[in-house]
Image (tube, helix red, strand yellow):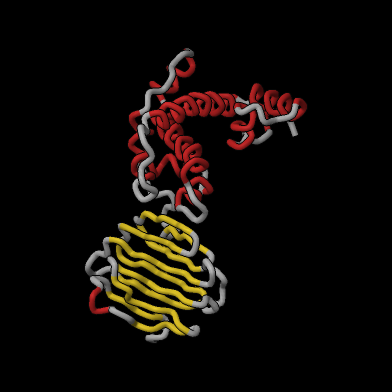
Length: 256
């Protein structure tokens, strides 16, 4: 294969190059590929400038926001953060490429994920979708997952117990609770924020439908909506509790 036919250098290799994480042989190989590929060279410069913006965005966070507020807080910080324009090339990208600011925001979340996200946090899912997907979400161009469906998080039971907490349930939202032979509890919802602790998933701001899957073999389980327990898992079976107090429509997997 000729140099001209080689694929572009992927973002992971470019980030590793910028971070000094490549061994000498790998570094020289990537540098040679970048030098031979204008698109890769442009992308490297774009990410380099974006990394500076990411650092500046994190500096704007005077104090950590709650985990539920963190995605929105980071999005605003990333949009407001100044970007270094030390080089002519960086100035050209800032002027001509709207994508540069979005990539900067994406890397901000990438950096922040390591500092703020707990296991199961949607931030990790966004990062896994790739820099451009995260950037598109922050820029408001499209949701991270596109039309792939709702975001979801999972958690293992803690000491045999699992608890799902719904905050700010909207009237008309459908809550479906099911059992599974899996060993983890899962919550799926659109346009929602999640907070995960050992044995607990808290979901806020969900639209349309919230789907909860509880592990059948958990010792105990509960689903709480705005402070009221509405579904209980006992002896491997789902039971309705204070459903009348909830603003949501509640359906159990056993309802048929």
